Length: 619
Image 1 (cartoon, rainbow, N blue to C red):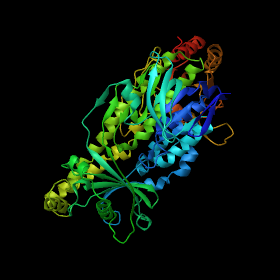
Image 2 (image 1 turned 60 degrees about the horizontal axis):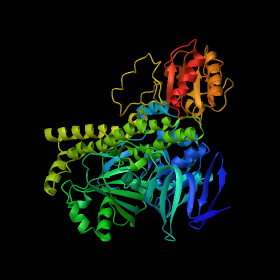
Image 3 (image 1 turned 180 degrees about the vertical axis):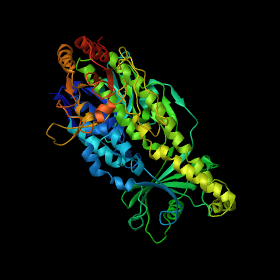
Image 4 (image 1 turned 90 degrees about the horizontal axis):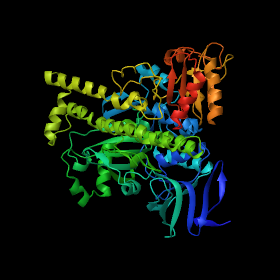
């Protein structure tokens, strides 16, 4: 059998479940059905999700390994639900810092010094515990990218994917919009350039994506908000954290002269409590070009970091320094024929609201089942058009929200009086907060209101979960109900709904003789369509069986209610399903509601088959 060697590892003909990972049709050319470029949260999770459908290929990265910098870190319930389906939730919890460490976001003078304000964060708000519990069986975790990526890459490798680092994507050639793709790859260890032929190419290659550049897909750009500096730090702050629990700490030192590049920072927990990331933001009037020409020395960085720490007696070690741009960019579309882009390649924004890697994972989850169904002959390739139609509007909303999250902090800065360039004016404005004057009273009121409004970033369960798809893979033909009005505040409030295109609501179920509870989101998904009905819905279950047999797809069907397949133990499903007991909700393999009927229909068998066929592009 012919074989090729990449990074010293043989790649030969062989099968992993239903598709061959690689084959070699001619000397020096590797063949694979799927080539993923980029092994970050988007690319590695896509490989994991495809593997769960029995699809394998090659995962490449120009980096020498998984992430060295902690970058993204908040993993929210919407993304964890996707990882939960493929058995990774426990691994994520094992590597993440405990949820109690995420209890607050704080504004302070230094890590060891005075505190100005704090707010409950990431589902730890006492008054919102029920709201978060109703939204998902998963909870927020703080899982730095340095720890998430190895989990994903190892899962992909275990699922049959060939993973190659130190492999730079040079460019591609394609025979027509859907023809075979030949990619040129440079092995950075050996200097050898070789080719990979694939049926699909996935650009998960980050903000400077060469695949996006070669496709020449237009980008929607808003003016950026400058440059930020990441300073990765080793400093043991455990003795200070008992009453300062939180993973984000905004630090302001208004009474001292600070370097223009080091106006303020977000001191972010990486590993409790001795590893941190200082996300340093410059002064509003900062000259970026001067910084580029004459960047600070390590001693200058260290001096400012010590001011952020607030105790010169504590040893501080700088592990790494890097810079990044605060972008507001989204691609106009995410795909071109059989080439698909996801993650930072198509949406670029700051980390506010913690939406970055979470959106990457959900991009991959949306795309994987569609590609798998097409490759297994279960769906027409038209289904793949729904990926961009569904995920691009989500990405556009995410970049707006993330940048608005940064802008929302301006009101806090104004109230603290830290914006003036002159030290004396900063001291004067900041001093008003302590004064029993009308100006002091007004400034304290504004600070309290501004801090409370940051709940849109640190308590935005709505923006995390209110993702509704509108495409040809969602069937509205038979929908007679108007969609409910959006919540009063769609960033803060999650609207549980079974309206077509919505995510399936979570509700705890159990058996008649109780065992371990199961969520509706665990019942659905797992590569199959899922039909949910209740007492009197027997015809729907029979319709699901017939439709599955006729279309050759897996359609699971369950009845929920009194003495049914599953018991609605708390009555939550009855309150959230929005259809009658004998109605039905049909979910796609990604747990998106594809269609529903408020009650029974005499043509149940025909309509279920027709709806599934339409979702799959086979109507």
